[in-house]
Length: 222
Image 1 (tube, helix red, strand yellow):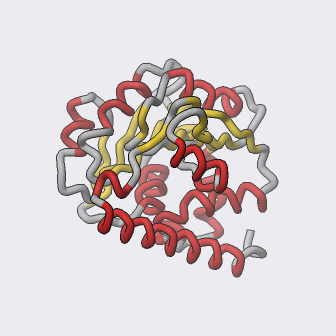
Image 2 (cartoon, rainbow, N blue to C red):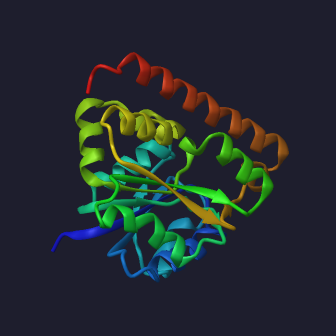
Image 3 (cartoon, rainbow, N blue to C red):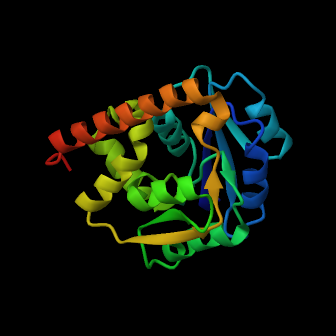
């Protein structure tokens, strides 16, 4: 039987944080199945996910967030895809339900979760650029349409969120913003240290900018 809602959690070296996210999603009555896409982790991310009793898709090397997300989409079946980051803090079952309900009730084709009332740094970042949020519920046909029009989309890395946002505009999707009170995530500088974290952040920004430029060049392809 085809699942109605599949939750995809792309993860790279998140053994310390992913278990808490999985526990919340598994407690949500609307989620039929959970998949962790282990993006070439060198730690116990996959093992933790297995121990939590969810499905794991493993990539042999780090391929980037966009690749992991679309790999998950291509290897699952559902009418709705829920995307969640693996490093979320204070995620609650109610937050997951609020992301899903507008799509389940066909009031929206996509929802975008925005942090609020949590950490100042992450709240501010999402107020400035909510289109970069990784917390979304999306109808599967949207992913199918993107894959049909852009065969190279999986190589976009951290540009996945801006790609979804731009395609939502092009396809004239009904998009609803959902507040996620007290939810935040662990910043890269906290995970990797100040210098390495800053370098990783700059890599992320470069991929986002490149993805946006490429999208603008191909805006008439859909």
